[in-house]
Every structure is written in structure tokens, then in C-alpha cells.
Length: 238
Ligand SMILES: Nc1ncnc2c1ncn2[C@@H]1O[C@H](COP(=O)(O)OP(=O)(O)OP(=O)(O)O)[C@@H](O)[C@H]1O
Ligand SMILES: [Mg+2]
Image (cartoon, rainbow, N blue to C red; front, side, top):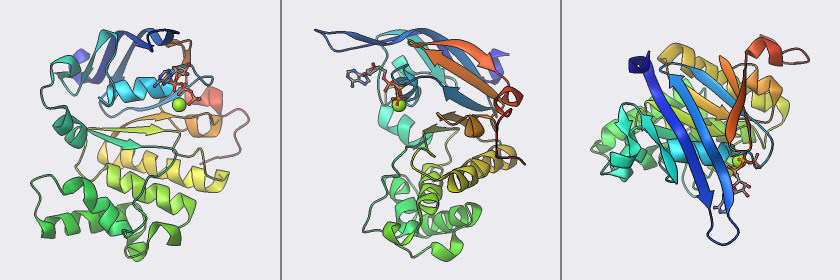
């Protein structure tokens, strides 16, 4: 069902450097369906972040091709517009602007889009409501807990209504309780809004909440697991 696929990657290769070459991706092929919640796991250095960067057009592959939301990324003329509108990114470090409030941080990605000031504010408030932080609207990042900051970062990633949310170890810096809340929020976004999500994680409890888990090694996907298989020793239950 390729028509329902939101991400198609074929034979992706990514080689970094020219002298001492690193093959970060080595013939990776994957398909993600619209509305799926996918976890990517694998050892450090297996290419997980590289894969997300290529899907999100933050970097280009050395070989192979990638289609996102019906667009071949090699042919996209305006990559800035693609990044701004089609994908939302959440990283391990929230990267919120410390001098701006939660609401203002969420408004930032809408600044260079054709969205009026009033509409920006309305959407930011709606998103804060959605991530459960309406009362924290006027707080600065350092007045929020780690989990709350990550929820603001998620709201910011959704500001331009992307088709796809990419999250690179979004719970990596959080205690297990806050991590569970952040993943719980992502699951809600997936279920309620049909948001397609790809999350990179080292945490089996986090991966256990996805629909499918892709295991990477040496720049390829070597195995696919079901969430039940991750939940064996999982302290987080729902
Ligand atoms: N900009 C770069 N220049 C050179 N090599 C890089 C660059 N970025 C990543 N690499 C190398 O590519 C390989 C894959 O890196 P990547 O960051 O994708 O791994 P990862 O699976 O995300 O690891 P981690 O779990 O530690 O975040 C690693 O060997 C890394 O050293
Ligand atoms: Mg990484």
C-alpha cells in the first residue's frame, strides 16, 4: 500500500567524511504508513540519528532515495519550506529559547509562515492546552520541569501542522516518570490526531508503546519487533 506510505526510504547510504570514511547508513530500506507510531532502536553509532536527519531533510543521503509525504526529497526545490511545513523535530535537548515564554517558543516556527499574529497566538494556546500546559503559558523554560520543557518542544514541533513528527531520544534526559508522560503524550497525538511519529529511543519501555519497533545495526534495519516483545520487563503499564 505505497499510496498510504508517508515515508519510503530505499537503499539509503550515508557516508560521512572524505579521508576516514564512516558509512552511517548502508543500504537501509523502510516504509512507514500514514498514522503509524514507529520506534527505532539500536546501538550507539548504528545510524539512527542520521536516518532521522535524512527523513527530515536536515541532511542528504549519499545514495538511495527517500520520499516523504509524496515528495522525493532529492527533487524538493524549497527544502526550507519542506522542513518548516512537512516535518516537526523533537530532540533530546529541547532547544527552547531561554528568554521566550512557553507560548512564544511555540510561536517561533510560525513567524516566517503566512500566519497572522493573532492566529499564531491562538494556535500556540491550543497546542499548550493539548500538551497539558495551558497554565504554564507565560513561564520561561527554566521555570518548567524537564518533562514540561519537552512537552513545549513537542507543541513547537507541531506548530505548523506537520504530516510527520520525528523525535530523537526525546526522553533521553528525563527520569522514567517524565519520560513515560512524554511518550504518553505522543501516543495521544498519534491516536487523537492521527499524527505519524518516528521516535528514536534506547528505552524498551518507550519503544513498547509504539506500533512497530525497527532495530538498526551498522546502518541498516536488521529486525522488526512488536511492542509486546518489549514489554516483558516493562515497568510502565497502561
Ligand atoms: N557529521 C558527522 N560526521 C562524521 N561522522 C558522523 C557524523 N554524524 C554521525 N557520524 C557517524 O556516523 C555513525 C552513525 O551516527 P548516528 O549519530 O546516526 O548514530 P546513532 O545511532 O544516532 O547513535 P547514538 O545512539 O549514539 O545517538 C557514527 O559512527 C557516527 O560517528
Ligand atoms: Mg543519535
